Image 1 (tube, rainbow, N blue to C red):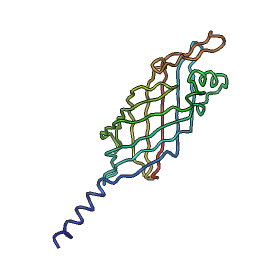
Image 2 (spheres, one colour; image 1 turned 60 degrees about the horizontal axis):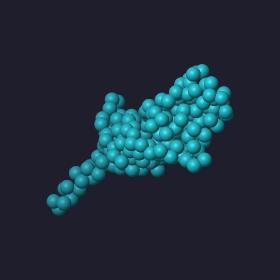
Image 3 (cartoon, rainbow, N blue to C red; image 1 turned 90 degrees about the vertical axis):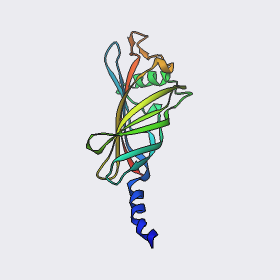
Image 4 (spheres, helix red, strand yellow; image 1 turned 60 degrees about the vertical axis):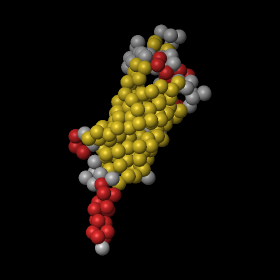
Length: 189
């Protein structure tokens, strides 16, 4: 009988730490940079992203694990196909068609309005080069039980052995630094 008395407390503890797998339904990736002529942008709406989220009884994200992310390089598109082709060549898509991120560890801290700041330490693979990269994202549980994930990261192309693309026989050169911005909507799988 005493065990039945503890059942509500045990069930409450389970609800307070409910865990679920979420997968990407809406993907909005933007890669932007500079050149000697003008700033440029490439966008993609295609990626595979999934993660396990732990959400407490008040709807706060308190844990994330098993995060997986990858995107085909050729899904990145600008307004100019010649720029796309030069970017694909620089990113060595013939041998490395995917950009991926593999997480080693994740920390979660509360943020305003019920969100969470998620800091991921992992391996970013671009053009066949793999480097340790920290990625910080703001995650929020939405009213429809989806999770929004947003963030911005600066990346050096040279650190990944990527020569910044050039155009018009080298008269137009892109800058080394690029900015990756992402907005993902993940739905419970």
